[in-house]
Every structure is written in C-alpha cells, then in structure tokens.
Amino acid sequence: MADDILAKEGARTPRLDTLSFYDKTEPSGDDWIYFQKIEKKRGRVGAHIDASKLGSCPASLVCPDFQALPGSLSDGEEIESERACIIRDGGYRAVLSGIGGDEFLGGNPDPRSHLADLIVQFKVIRLAKQLTAWSLIKRRPWIHLLWQASMDLLPASLGQYFVEQANVERWIEKDFAQRTKLATRQLDVAEHFGCWLPTRRSYIGGVVLMANRLAKSKPPVDALEENRFPYLDQGLIEFILSIPAGQLLRPGERRSLMRRSLAALVPQEILCRRTKQFGARTPVVALEKNLKQLQIVFSSPLSSRLGYVSQARFLKTLRDAINGKTVHLVRLLRTISLEIWLQGLQAHRLIEVTPTSPRAVAVGSLQASSQRTR
Image (tube, rainbow, N blue to C red; front, side, top):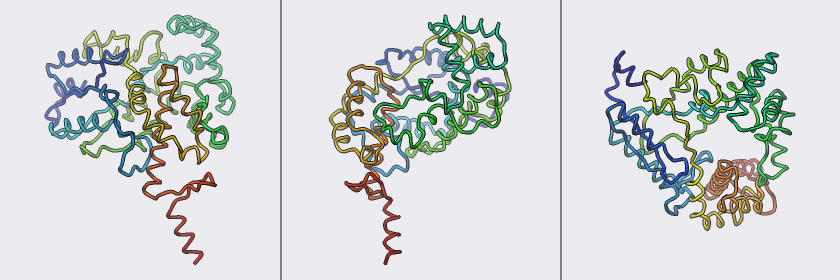
C-alpha cells in the first residue's frame, strides 16, 4: 500500500523498507516464507531478525535499570538492540507498526459479537445460517456458539460468571481479584459511549484497551525513531465502526475486508494464506532455561507478600507450562514481569514492604509523614 501511494501520489519519504521477525523453531513459524514473497513483489530485500534468540540461551530476566511501569523483561534486550541497530544504521526516522490490525480488521475472527447482533436485531434466518457456517469453521456445536453469543449480551457483572475470558488465573489471590473486580476488567471496559450493538461495543472496548496499552508502553531508547500506527488511524477506526460487521467477520476468511481491498496490490499467496504464526514455544523454552533464576526470584515474592499472587500456585503453574501443559502464557509472563518490577522498586528504595504487614509504602510518603510528625 505504501509503495502504491509513493508511486501514484508521491511523498517526501525517500524510501520505505521492511523489517521482519521470524522464528523457524515455532511449530507455526512460517512467516519467513511469506515475507520473502512480499520482498519479491517489491523488488527489495528487507531486514530480518531471528526471534528464536529469546529461547536459545539463558539470559537474566532482571533489568538493572529503573522501570516506571511493569511489563518488560530483559531477555528481549538482544533482539531490541538488533532492531535498534537496523533503525540507526539505516537512517530511518519513522517506523510503521502493525499494532491494531488483528484487533480491528478481523485478524483473530471471533463471531460472538456478530451473532449477538443478529439476536438483538431478531434476524433469525440469517442467525441460523451464520451459526451453521461458523460451526463448521470453528468445529464446535452450533448450540455452543449460540450460548457464547447470548452471554455476550449480558452485562459484565453477570457475564463474569459464565464467560471463559473472565476466568481469573488460579495463582491470583481471590481477595485481590474480588477487591479489584479483576474478572469484570478482563471481560469488558467500563465505557461504551452509548453503543447498543454488541459488535460496536466490542470495537469501542478494543479502542479503549488499545489506548491504555499504548499509553503505558515503553518508548524505544536505543533508537529514537517515531512510531506510527496506520491501523489506529482515526479515519479508519470511524470507517470500521460505520460498516456492517459482516464485512469484517466472514466464516473462514481472516481479515476478509482487508484482503478484498488489497487484491490488486498484494501477492495472491499472501491473500490466500490460511496460517498465522503464534509464538508459544519460544517463551516456554526461555522460561525453562531461566527456571533457576525464576525460582530464586519467587523464593520470597513481593507480589505474594502484598496479597496479589499465591507463591505455591504460581510456581506449580510455571512447572506446568514448562512440562507442556496448557496455561495462559501471556498472563504468566505478566506476573513474572510484575514481580521483577516490584523487586526493582524495592532495590531502588522506592517502596518498602514490611515483613509483618502485606502493604507497600512509597518512601516519599514515609519521609513526608516523618517530617509532619517532627
């Protein structure tokens, strides 16, 4: 698309190159096959980064530098340094990110909200056809899909008891989950701006979650490029909210509208691709190679002393993940990053956790209180 714009409309941009991550060790790791087809179409070879380095050797997970927010583990520093080197050496000023493509253009097609639309609109015949089609694609009974769509109509306060997405991980302390309403937070956002159709509520929720995610993301420090997010363009999001959901969600057609719109620009092999790479093996290998360090980190975890996480249940889940059992890997990694972040704050003397009281106190507030007492 960028090549087409540059050729037809022109721009001050001198050139546009591609940067592709790949991991041949992943069972679904076939991205490297497809980005080469894009390069052939463009007539220009891009930069390639082997993401399997994350699990190739043991690396310290603890970042010695101060981190304002949890979320980053230092095992990815080698890949980030390689990416930053490519940006600097190439003289690139801006990076176009693909964040938002899957979320808003049907990259991970979930028919629940679309089927719920048909329920509230009383389109019974179309609902029956869609249930049949999605049942064949998802390989699930149509009654199961209908149940999921019906649960999507419930308010989050009730849906948390029936929807799998709201399930709180077993290593999270129940008191903490109840106090913070974690199940409801995992299921939905508080603001829907008056949207009554489930698909519109879903899109609005995605926008709010994406905004929160980007607001808390760590900016690059090794390469001071400007990040741009074409899929989060306001005009594109408004367009997506204005068209029928059936244009985006079609049985067996991931990113249906996008593929149809790019038919004259993108190679046919890309448009007809049915696979999608999910990085599941490499993080598990990285956890296995850093197991000893993780056991030390969680020998006396601050997250447990603060009442967030059960130490025993978390370590058991960690062993389950390494042994090949199905766990929510993203939430597992987030818990690890939270613990390492808390220990980093304690090392920098920004919080104090007393052995007898499961509370964290900011050092600044302690000093201020002491001054008022004197």
